[in-house]
Amino acid sequence: MNTLALELQTASGARPLSFGLRRLVNVGYAGRDQAAVRAHVEELREQGVAPPPTTPLCIFVAASILTTGDEIEVLPGRTSGEAEVALFVDGERMYVGVGSDHTDRDLESVSMEKSKQICPNVVSRQVWRYEDVAERWDRLVLRSFVTRGESGGERPYQCAPLSALLPVQALLDCVLSRLPEAGREGLVIFSGTVPLLGAPADDADRFRCELCDEEAGRWLECSYRIRKLCGMR
Image (cartoon, rainbow, N blue to C red):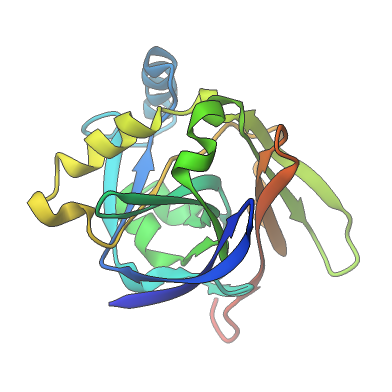
């Protein structure tokens, strides 16, 4: 079991939260407008990328690749982060974090499932209770930023409200339908990502994402450095 040392943030303060991770699932093609998703799948097909068997797509990945660290190591080549909501499900309790489903873009053109296994998933240490934000869920904003070079400036990379993604219940139904009855114990679901604001940043040195609750004046943040493994071509 991968045990994550988290911090639960509430209106009355913060307290430590230990989460025993048993299963990690990355949801792909999770846009709320599934007609637009299918059109995008056809565009990818024309570019030589194999279409998924279903949309949305649930990809089960090794629980050991999830980290709250501030640095990851990746293979040389094209990799990039993706801002996503992370749902921490433990029985009837559910917490919300923000994270990045870091992906190997070269391998993705061969197998999306394998591309999700080769890089770590990174998630914020701080989380919220889902019930504290459920009523304004669609108005929460998911953002990301990238930095190139040690002295390079940070630039916006993604920005969209959560209304752009499938609702929480739809994500849960998609994943739990593929799990045994005890699937709600120690489960983390990455929600799928939102569109880019410009060109892909598959050579960035740092990735940062945040989930903003603007009405409450608070946010969650996940930030990490990307280090390519040395001695490899």
